[in-house]
Image 1 (tube, rainbow, N blue to C red):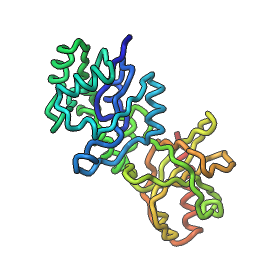
Image 2 (cartoon, helix red, strand yellow):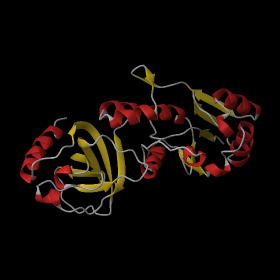
Image 3 (cartoon, rainbow, N blue to C red):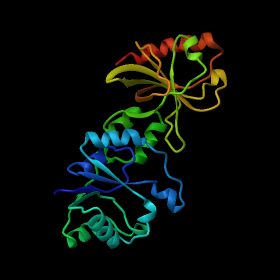
Length: 278
């Protein structure tokens, strides 16, 4: 039976990851980001677990989640022999060109290929996937999102950047302004894109709606924490407590404070027209 395991740090599941996952039956993931255990600061996440698992299922790949604490000290040979062969019964492995593994990242793609061949496992090393003449990477995607470059980030991801968090109860101010919003909080450790207004879309019960999302502190009303506030065009309903998948399509403008509710409403009307432009 074929059991090909994709190896790597699959933050974001971008187009480079998709190339590694192609033909794999399983994807090895860890319960925590390696840097969290090794003393560093993990980079902001690009994908929540709920969305990640859904994307993997769509690719026909099953996640295998192992405790990183049990693995991080293993030398490369022990990782292949004890984990891939004995524990996971892998018949194949796939990794990116820059893959590192084993204690102190001592192993690379060549090491994996050699050790897999010695243990009767097929190994496929995937060359870099390029965008604008440079390898696609989670770092480049984060930089693009922090700059408001949704076009670049979405091109490297192979889909719109998004998140799927529960809808929180807000103060109802959006409804009073004529633009009720579904409010979501970014979990600690998740990337917060450039603050401002985005053309967006959401999916509810299988139906796709155009939307307008503001990410920020609501400076006109002295907001205290960063929220995602999404106004869904042509929708009425109670979403509190439900998970809402929001996708950011296009950056419209930076967040800024207005003189009051009337000025903000006038700007929201202009933003809504801009978001409606495909």
